[in-house]
Length: 258
Image 1 (cartoon, rainbow, N blue to C red):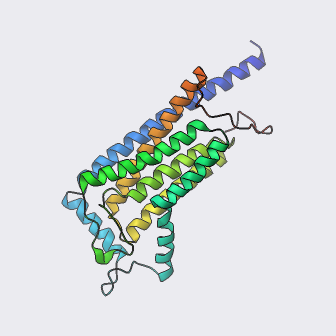
Image 2 (spheres, helix red, strand yellow; image 1 turned 120 degrees about the vertical axis):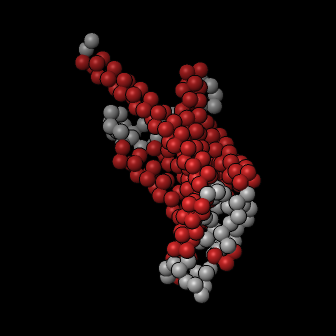
Image 3 (tube, rainbow, N blue to C red; image 1 turned 60 degrees about the vertical axis):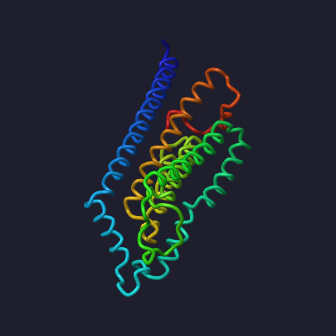
């Protein structure tokens, strides 16, 4: 075996190991998300869980004469209201349409279908779980924004986690270097976290609602990634028509650097 052959074998082995590690990591995140949701759902019916939610709500509402006013200066409430809209179904639907049209223009057929199915599945999960648990929202006097339907889990937290994590994972495929991958994943996580925090800050949800939404959203996002990974491998092997077209390769990028 020549040095060149050995180098190619090592790169292929490294790529396979990374792919299998990614699958295991996705499975672990999905499992942790499901277990976390089950634990939070159980705790919210017990005294300790309810006491925690009440404590967080009280900490965000320190003004006895104005229970609807959240902690902090006036502009913080306005900023939170702006950020929380990033998890609304209208905003996410618009963002999803833009991203899907872009993916279709790049012939990323599989990614566009999975993103649309993922967001639709997230809405179904959110509404289905709300219908099952039928939890009341925080008191009306404590809410700084209008709300509809049940409280548990937070639909904003769930859907923003699904969407922003899914888009971030898709974007990582376009960057050859690790620091860029970490950056886009970090942005996706930060956006989902901020949306969830604003739901509690604005009194639209109990803290446990948001924790449950993050857990379900992360689990569903990882399931979508696993489906995409499995479908891409199957379709590539069988030359199926739905597979994504290959992305342009950066001629200056070193394939061994991630």
